Amino acid sequence: MSERSEPGNEVLAQTDSHRKDGWSKGKEKSLEGLLKGKIALEHSLGLGPKPNCIPWGEARVDGELRPVEIGWHPVAGMGGKWLAEKSGLGKAITKEIGRYPDPTQHWAVLVGGFVHQLWMDEHLDVIYINDHLDRSEWHTYEVGKTRFTDEALRQAAEMVIHNMREKRPAYNLINNNCQNYALLLLDAIQIGAHQEFATSFAVYQRATGAGTIKDLFEDKHPDEQKIDAAPPGFDRTDTVQNAQQVMEENTTKLDNHHSLLHE
Image (cartoon, rainbow, N blue to C red; front, side, top):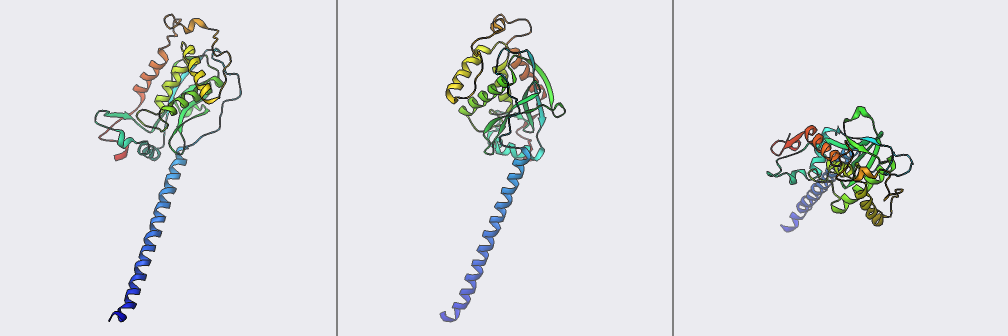
């Protein structure tokens, strides 16, 4: 009887083998589909480094006084959902946090025709990128002034990202995001903060060996750097406070009971 059952066993074994092969191939196709979907979303968001748009020029902190703006533009809807999920939003939101920034609103610092912004690489670690300013794409708000030249701004922006990555490289919607970056950059480049910037930048230079700013510790506008005696209209705290207020008033807030993740 055992001899007569052997052919049946072989058929069952072959059937089981084919089933496992089919499941394995199906799994591979599913994983391949997920990977393709992930790559498509990454491409739609434009993750990763981009070419530097800032033309060569002298890096100075005592150049012509120029207005500083912050601005925001929307991130694509499906990309925003994916970004929220991948940035740990689902784990980070608690009853204590309550409301949080809409992940589809992206903020940046705008000066002299260029956009300075936090972005992410393919691993969702924060990086710095810049771009030419197309005002038709941005909702903009003037928040202060700066004497930083475009190249000095680029180097300051790189420094801010470096310092953020030292503390926490991964993007996080709550406390390591584009708004945090914009405020830190504004704090570094605002009128009245040049001495503190010089000290911070010297530390950054020693750590990275990158960047040079001429006459870093010498300023041709010393009166503007006096904390308690800044000229009228140049209060060193105004820029960051103005930006915080603008962001608070113009950033859509989502709550933890109804979010993009559950729509």
